[in-house]
Amino acid sequence: MAAKIILLPGDGIGPEIIAPALELLAAVGTSFDYEEHAFGGAAIDAHGTALSDETLAACKAADAVLLAAVGGPRWDTTDPSKPRPEQGLLGLRKGLGLYANLRPVRPLPALYDASPLKREVIEGTDLLVVRELTGGIYFGEKTRSADAASDLCAYSREEITRIARVAFRAARRKVTSVDKANVIETSRLWREVVRELHAAEFASVELEHVLVDNAAMRLVSNPASFDVIVTENMFGDILSDEAATLTGSIGLLPSASLGDPGQPGVFEPVHGSAPDIAGTGTANPIAMFLSAAMMLRHALGLDGEAAAIESAVDRALAAGLRTRDLGGSTSTREATQAVLSNL
Ligand code: NAD
Ligand code: IPM
Ligand code: MN
Image 1 (cartoon, helix red, strand yellow):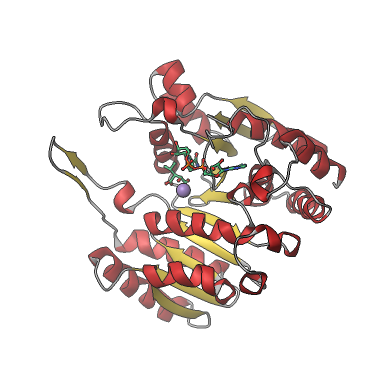
Image 2 (image 1 turned 180 degrees about the vertical axis):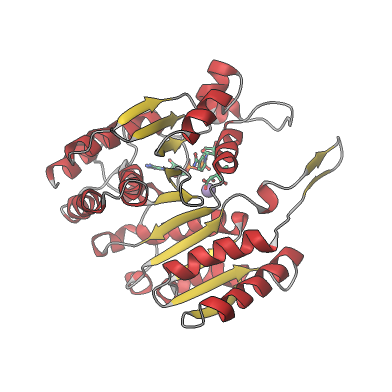
């Protein structure tokens, strides 16, 4: 039986980049049982909620979820009683137990000059951000009155241990655990638990602890000094967008959101719905393509097909594919053709 994949195009450029990804998946010879659901703002318009019970149930029963992006000015509100597209994303991650978000950052030599950073700074960078995805300030209790608001940041020993284990297993030479242990209590527990796990199970992997403000600086001054960065939810969100500048554009960064074995993963670009360019046909589809490749590898065991997509992307970029975010004028359609013709 063909694997069941739930498609969540979402909003903004989402539908414009997911359709080319399906073309590419077909071109590498895969054939899946796809089922598309409205998600995010589109689902608010259709059902009054960003993630319907039916969509969550379908995702739980699937082999994998391929998601583009959600959100947009149409649904932006500061009123806590109004639904927001982003609640769909958070509900999906929590509902599927996807605590581990893998965000690889591997700048290509062909694109060194597309980054605002100097070539000498970027050279040799090949890092992985392992972002905790179902805890921290994103999911703690929130309060709001007319004149005050609060967000609780909470982590348990178990939540920290399981994400640190993912990071140590992914490391080739070193794990950098990023926290704010000089100020924040959850960070002090984080540091202690990471240190204990390292001593007990991963003593052969180098471990360093770096404060988040310093880590933010090092990401753009000495990024090649990182191998695996493991960090809590919000720090990981911020640092991964920062790391995107190393590759030339956030339009290139894929991610995989994974839970315990047996849970379907969600595969999604790091970027958002890019409302500023939606509808112009200029979105960079590569982060979506590479997210599809991560799905093939992590969820479906199709390593060869995943590698075929990745190398076609590399070759198309080396041959000059430059969408507008990379300083060029290649359209979404032309970028798709370029990758297809390099398969
Ligand atoms: P964004 O990532 O959507 O866009 C930031 C900048 O990068 C914009 O200038 C945009 O044009 C550009 N960009 C992003 N992806 C691109 C691509 N594939 N090709 C070319 N350019 C690209 O972030 P934002 O503007 O802060 O947020 C817009 C909306 O997206 C918000 O509603 C936000 O909540 C949402 N968002 C969703 C996700 C997600 O669905 N996973 C992630 C981040 C933001
Ligand atoms: C991301 C996004 C989301 C996050 C938002 C849209 C909820 O920025 O996937 O990086 O903060 O996790
Ligand atoms: Mn983000």
